[in-house]
Image 1 (tube, one colour):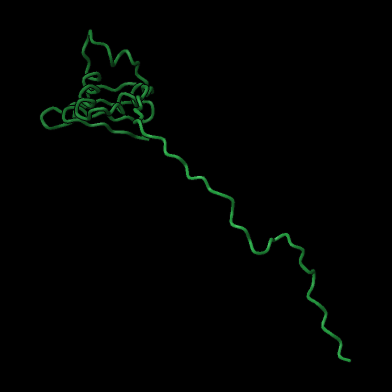
Image 2 (spheres, rainbow, N blue to C red):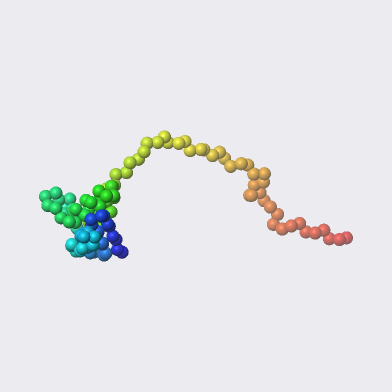
Length: 121
């Protein structure tokens, strides 16, 4: 399976366990780095040094707010997703009464065969 994540300045192509990081220079995509994945979560979140990969992830998340698919694809770890449950009144379920009475029960004994024809006398 092959995935491509693109922003105006960066393009990350992931295929198998390899990721290629490309950078837009003079209107052309230039390969800047090839790396094996998964990448450590700390490498993408470290503030003490800047890297092209970290910049690409941050720009992708800035261009597409709330989309962490690139980070998840690189690290193999999808962070916890906070689900918000909206409060709503619990509706009363309609209670069904007994089924309507049948005119003839299916368990009433029925003749096994039709009555014999009367013999002519």
